[in-house]
Length: 257
Image (cartoon, rainbow, N blue to C red):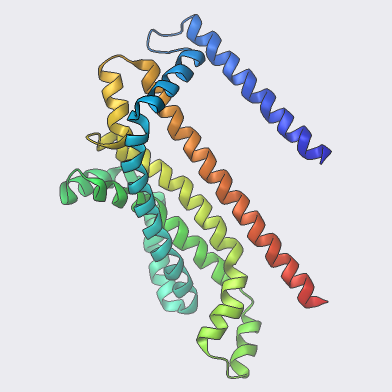
């Protein structure tokens, strides 16, 4: 308890120092387009009260949920299937690694030309950014499963469904959860890229609109809202991961006893 309190105190001190530094930099000012922290905070409250920010996040959140959800739905089964079928794993892994190392932003114009400027295109960009990381982590988790356990289950004529449910999924779960969390971080990167290029709607439209009208405090407030949402979602994913793995460890300890 004392250690946790110390960690949160240090985090609070770092946050206060960063806000004071931001306020000082805005009051110098380092640029006419750089607002103070207090001005950005007031602008954030104004955007929330007027409904502009919630309306922007309604469409942006829809694109994030759709793209990241599809990344999980396709990436996790693909990674597990790659582990269960080694020839498929050797082939698909090459393409996934190419997608991971290549600059994803280069694919954005192709998506826009193919699908147009809409929420589906934004969701597709989010999917492209996040799915390879989800799949490759699920594949790595599958490869970490002890093959002796699978062979023992086969020796007792266990069906593939039971092998996957009782052996494969529990063994690969840590890597699957880590891949889902990292995929969420990548999804936000794709979301930012999509929103800035597909600016006719969502938070990206709000950023471009406030920049064109020189309302830099509102522009910074909108960007800050994206940072806050990303931090909250990633913290929630990390907390969920730690809770699930804690229950898994307790179950394993109970089974050993």
